[in-house]
Length: 374
Length: 263
Ligand code: SF4
Image (tube, rainbow over all chains, first blue to last red):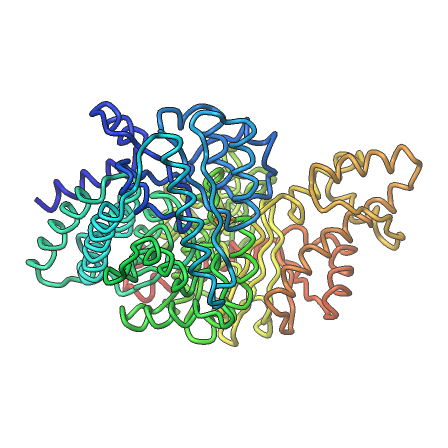
């Protein structure tokens, strides 16, 4: 059971396009969600399967005319897939305006990609202002109206509440898996762990919750077993490819937790179910985001959160997966690294979907292992 | 116990044969790296110079980008670890090691026992690497050996571009404008010194500073880098063998620790 469920999630993480086609062939409409902090719940409530658009390992040819080489690979490869027709078949794409790169990406879709249409929305950065939640809710409502205008699918309060419940249930399942996986690294290596989290972006949440619960139950029935003494936690927007996870495994590292947006970090807090207005509940979810490089904070809390996690999971080191050319993250990195290194050995790895230099990554990881061992 | 370290880089292959982790019996170098017959040839050269056969070697450690291709290796160790260990052997007072290799530049902080405390790699682009220097030497119509002499004592012409591809265009247009080759060579050295210096300063420079790798033989560049960092830079005469020596030393340490029998 454990292996079947894992295999299904690994396959989905490996070939998202196939997963998308399968939904479409089954007559289920699919809508693309460009990260980060995209309100998938609204897409779900409108009756579409929300599908994470994380770009991918591809050669950039068409996107070069619109997006410079010094933009992050997430945005560049998303634009490439939009321009070369890979995303055709999606009913629409929603995209947040969170950073300059995403702004450029949305403009590219508007100018050069007519199919699927892109529906952008803004997220406020001054989140301590009393009006911030109201502004966010207004943006979400406007987004809902755009979806309805385009597809005819309205979003009722009842549907929103149902979707919030489904998403909260999924988050709970993911948090439980995350904790169980950290104590069963004999079965859940870095690759398998990443596949469980990655696949969540490409699968209907109800189905994903079921499979993840199966895995967690099977793990909990086994005695705890830590494969390697070298335990690390990861942090970043994305921890890159399965090949990078394989390198960590080969060099004897157990990944036992993460503060990675693409992996477990997005599941940390539930969306409130006690508010009368579910759109406002969703807006507040954004207001409460902490420790993220794309959500401004007066006092940055990310390094403290990463160190707390490392302590809880008995990890002896941190790996900062730095998305190459990600302005918000590279801006934050020097300060964060200084704070992390004061308490914990920290390795920085550049993440670039378009050119994974695996040998150089291996050299860094191997040396880091030597440093920890000495 | 005899141990052998082989450092297979992108442009050169180097071997060191050591006895008992203290005595260097032989070193050998070939200007041919990964994917060539360089590694095999340099291995034969070193064994001949050391007066021994492969069967006499208790352990082989391979390092450099080609380390995974070395079938005879008992250990495959990252070049940063090997360079750090090699630098400590050559000059135990070294606390900051700067290695400019064919593919990348590395800065390594060592403690008093030669252990790596911190490291940084410039793996983002070709500028600031040995490969960059090689391409520039070609544009100037000289070999890499000649290049250093050409730049010696010359006023550096400004090479503003930090990108290897654009720098080539810039050098060609300077040649066309009649700028002396020596000044251009000095300008190229300065651009590398600034880039590598920037990397070192990001980590923090603790003396004594050593430079290793083939680029360390470029005296004018070492001089400029020293000025950038405000520090004297040690260059051992075996600077090119730092990685191979470190590999031989680590092979010795690991074999001793594992209690493996000598041949
Ligand atoms: S936040 Fe960073 S990774 Fe995300 S889209 Fe913007 S630049 Fe890219």
